[in-house]
Length: 415
Image 1 (cartoon, helix red, strand yellow):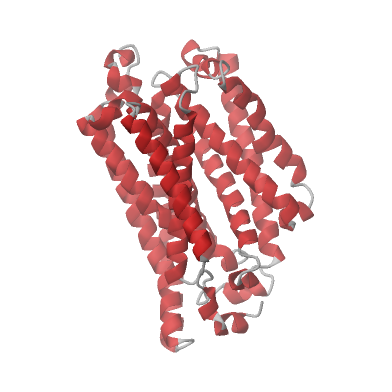
Image 2 (cartoon, rainbow, N blue to C red; image 1 turned 180 degrees about the horizontal axis):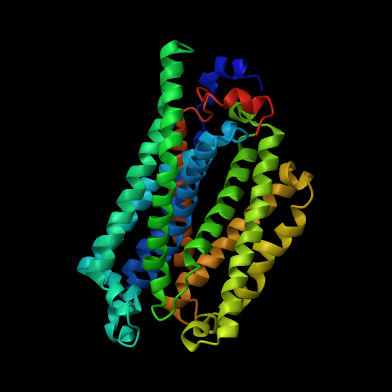
């Protein structure tokens, strides 16, 4: 793709979807919401909260990863990803929805609405933490809710600022063309993003880890992992790369897809390969540390997930999110050939969704997986909202950063 031709056809770079696609997304979301509403009606409120928590955190992670990955490229001045940068930035359009859910959930925790506190064992029985100095101070409902509200709001404000600065230069370009004002706006936005992305990325890491500790790890309050934030980051980036790769293939026949070259498919595939290995490394580090340490409070977490229906998920998921991607993605063609790359990306996303199931559901259901339709309902709602937010974003924003000063270099093959 030539940069001049791309800019000349910029009106075709908005995301236009057929009515059948929009209707399908709406049906999936409404079906999921109906299942969850049925769960509330049947008196399974804690179980519904658990299903919402695991699915909203799953899609929230991908959305945050999309804007964080953009910040990483801005910090180092990466060139190769400029044609697809707006694509993964569009994932961040889900962050206001995910943030709204977390804030509603935290309000329900504060006032114990719809049995929200039944999700966390330490809120039901505070005496669980009597023999765990430090945790009995950290895990106080009021303290947790206040700091998590701060984290959610901070992530939302920073991500929306970052997204607004990135899209502003294209909006100016769309109205005034390649004028001096447009070029000045693009350079100013590039400099601002490059300067502020480093501290913003640090804040993302801190706030996201805080949410992961409080909303997920505290479901098992006597268990603790110092690797938890990094482990969630590995899942975030692996699922992000899989999501980007899927959308690259979905848009390949679209006018937007003409902006993507084989280099972008290859590099995203390499990153997906690398983060598959990184995820496996951190998972193994968890298991190895607790095995040789033999600390009852720590090993119990894993032993509980080796019983009942969880046993099969524990056995199968390493093959889907590590072993198969490890060997399949060694081949170059597997990164840009749809018949190979699409199944691999879908497999990783499904496998990591089951990893979130392993984290959340056993803490609520124990050795059983009752009402699994609620988890599927949460998945349908989350998926519908996630894709719907991207479609809405793409209708008002070009899906390629046509005013990005580094975009011409990307088409010249620079990294």
